[in-house]
Each structure stands twice: as C-alpha cells, then as structure tokens.
Image 1: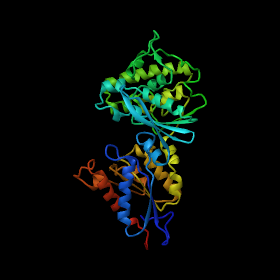
Image 2 (image 1 turned 45 degrees about the vertical axis):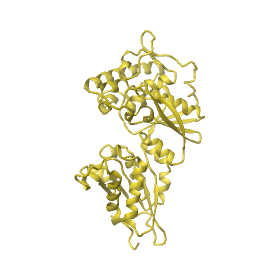
Image 3 (image 1 turned 90 degrees about the vertical axis):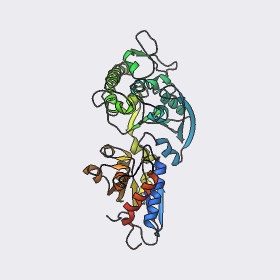
Image 4 (image 1 turned 180 degrees about the horizontal axis):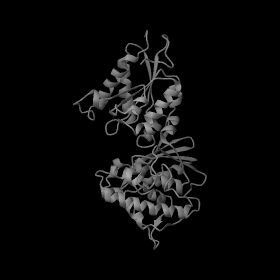
Length: 391
C-alpha cells in the first residue's frame, strides 16, 4: 500500500491525522493518540510530518475528554453514583449545547466489584442530575452520551431526578435499580408541568448499539452479564424492564420496548426517549463532527485510528469504523492499530487499508502494562512503508 489521496508534494510536510478511541484499561484516547504520533514521527524521520491529534469517542467513556480536547468548557458537577455514593463528574459546554457523558454518573468503572447485586440495584439517578445541571447552564440542546454503564434500570433513576418518580401500586417510591421496577405501577408528575425545565430543550441520545429494551437481544440479555448479572439476574431485569416499558407507554403514550437502540446503557436510552422526548443519534458520527474530524481528514495524507479491541462490533458502528469511512470518502489511506484485532475477520480487515495489533506483534508481552511503548513501536512498523516516494 502507498499513500494516495492528498499526496504531499515535496515542498510541504506530510499531514497525518491520528484519531483513536481509548484502549480500555490502559490508555485514554488522548494517550493513545500521543503514542501513535510518536510512532509516526519515528517512522517518517527525517521527513517533516505535521500530526493532528483528534482523540475520539462513540458516546460512551471518553466522550467528555474528546470534547474538551476539541475546545469545549468543563463544568464540574457532583452527582449520585450508580450505587448511591456521591461522585465528581463534569459537563462539557460549547455555545448553547451541553454534553453529558452518562458513564461519569453510572459507569461500570464506578462499581468496584460488579456482581448480580450491583447489576440489579445500580441506578441512573446521577444521569438525571447531570441533565438538570446541563439545562441549568442555559443550554438549548443537551447531548447525552450512552455507553459503559453499570445500570439496567431503563432510565428510571434518570426519570426520578427529573421529577418523574416511579411508584408502586400504593403510590410509594420504588427503590433504585432495575430489580425494583418489577413493582412499578406508575409515575408521579413533576411539580412543574414542563418536565423539570426540559420544555424547549432538545435532547439527543448518542449511542451506537441497536439493541432493543427487552428480549433476547435486549439490554439485560446482551449487556447484563458484562455488568455482573448472572442468568437469574438477567431474567429478573428483563421482566422488570417489560413492566417499566408498559408504565412508560401508559404515561407518555409511546412504546419504547422494541425501538432499535432503546437498550443502550441498560435501557437508559428508552427512558430518554419517553421522558425527555429524545432523539437517538449515532454517537460516533455525532462526536466526529463535533471534534472537527471531517475538516482535518479533508487535508490529510494519511489517517490513523484504533482502539483496544478491533472486532465485529467495531465494524457495526464503533468510532474507528466511522473514522475509516470518513477517510475512504476523502480518498485518504487509513491505518488501524489496536491492542487486539480479529485479523481473521474479513470485514474487520476490509474496513481499513492496513490493520495491526499489539497482541499478535508482541507475543508473550504484557500489552496491558506496556501499551504506550508497544503502541508506538507497532505504529512505527506499520507506517514505515508509507512514506511518500521521493521524500
């Protein structure tokens, strides 16, 4: 493979855009971009290279970081964590738009020892508190990034924070968490009739999964085990979410149980659709636009992307695939570097012009403990042959 697209003439530097997502458990997206940039400079030396770092996210963890790097302002907020403890979070604000990363309030990283007990009682209350704080900044649009949650409560906690409190048949508030939704019979209305100040505020739910709220492909069945739910807990949660969906339909007149994407973040998307009249949008596409990646790619000679694991899930909507699509549309070669890549999956390999990973390149090495160093080396080796001819 050789660099094509915007091939650099001899009188200007080579322009390389580096836009990775996080390497979960080892590097943030920014740290990954910096390691890859070092590898690019190693490979191209002594050719001058201009590197544009554009760390990305797909709506889940790392979304806020990517937005702040691109120029948004952070507003610190203390909210309720998934198990009821206070946690420090932040909102990113740019113009009249505020961005909420739900994982900051209900993320799995906030649960030290996930198990069936935590999976069934974790709550999205803090996400609702973040939305209220976002509206309090004067924002007219609130983007809620979904992903990486510890919760499977269908957004019931979020609804409670906005004044729509789930209650049982006797009118008593039900406890937090998905398990308790089995007893929910209705919702109290907010004291104000304007959905806690949300009237006139556009809410976007940014995600890249197509799971419905319930059923064998739903929130509990697909994502519950990742959050510590055993088969019994998955069954309890799925039944409880069905009850919750019926209540939402009765109150808001909208059945969200089978909406593609409603199962994102443990059904938080479903709650946003019903309670906030939210619009579901692609997290990857939205974030790439917000961080200015299309503009950066348009003048690039080479694009690099990657994440911790490149697999079938990546090519069905994750950030690196969206980066590759942008690069392909602009006629710019795109290279993917991952911690681990399914190099035997033809769709994974076809999504990029060149794919490499750390696990296969460094067998026997602890790639989780030396990720930055190995990522730099692997990037250098992959792009070394891509220096434009005559440079």
